[in-house]
Length: 275
Image 1 (cartoon, rainbow, N blue to C red):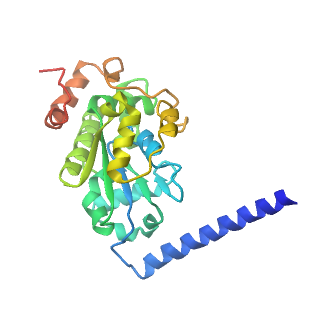
Image 2: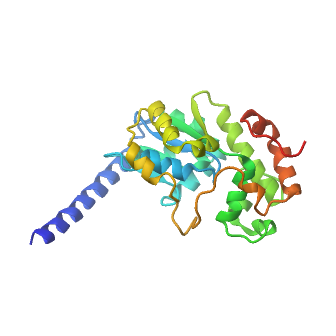
Image 3: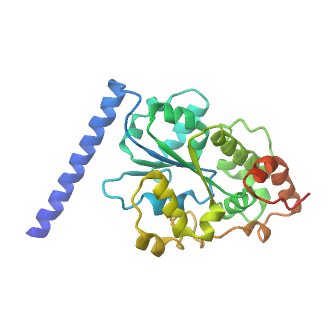
């Protein structure tokens, strides 16, 4: 009897939560009380740059905290693409107010627009060597050759108005657009993925302190070396810096990446392999 009552109460609790969410979204849709005074944490950075691992270590299991990750909430892809193209505004997506933390790499391109509607928000950008970013993308999409990247819909996306046809150039330009857009903002907290790999626990603690978030050292120590992406997306163990040296990328590919991203790479301390 107790078990049945417990299950019933859980169902009622879920229904109440859904109703509260619906009322909140409806309120912001109709009343349009923007900007929103809620303090929201936004984590961005090029895809395949460690944002999932760092966001999970930082945001998950905080009591009462609601965490939006784009893998489970794919409607957010439409948000940053539409806002970037100026066809819609952040305020056109009131569902965003439901979350305390948001991890969506593409929001790197719309930080000013996001902060306009969430002025108390704090932004974290994860920087990764663009050569490793491209190499990681190749592994994520499970292609057997660089040429196969040309058929990947994510690589072919045109919302960023990238004119290049070559897939390596497209990915390098995507990395460059993300980071240059973020660097135009004064109050973004940048974290290099390579520094995270050197000492994951200390890096998460530093971010938590800067963001004024709780930090559970025991939990972070236990999870930091595990693959925190769903196995359907990445079924391999997380790889540290320098994986591009042994992957499918050849010297010509590396030269393209370094030529496009040269200025930003040097700024963030990434040595060029080709002079």
